[in-house]
Length: 247
Image (cartoon, rainbow, N blue to C red; front, side):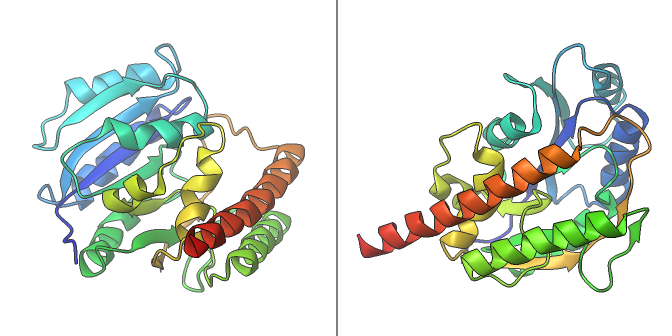
């Protein structure tokens, strides 16, 4: 069994400024310096609103945890998920987290402890577990998300409450084994391919708070199209896994 050695954290930032600083502060104040190999702030562009705050964070860093900035080759969440894991080094596990504070960075220490006990598992923080709290999360939004996760779980024969979130501690070995090659589909494959391949997946609870800074790109149309793409990718990943098993 591979041991948990340390965690590389990638913080995605686009329009966030105050919450970016609060995210980094929460990580530094709550995580053990022995557990974190580095924190990398991945900026959507060199002139995005988060850039100034990110540079200030790097300049004023007094912790022993290295903090650096990197500019995405292509802006957008889908491309970020594909690019981010290749930018960190010297870690056994990595985590991608947003900087809008919607997913609680205070959950990371508990995720790390779970990863230490289960180093070969993907550890996901779910806002849909019974003991999780969701602040200002609409009933329709909740119903839609729960339905999408439920259907994908049925397709992949997986029992989980939050399958499509990238708020996960991911073992580097598993990521390398997945061999992601499609940048535009990476966001979908990132969460679905390991489950289709039968990789172990475990959840802990986390809290959700609606963003108060930065612009959300959520629209009903985008959500519907994204959900349909998730269903399609889930089916294709299940077929892909069956084909590999037969070979």
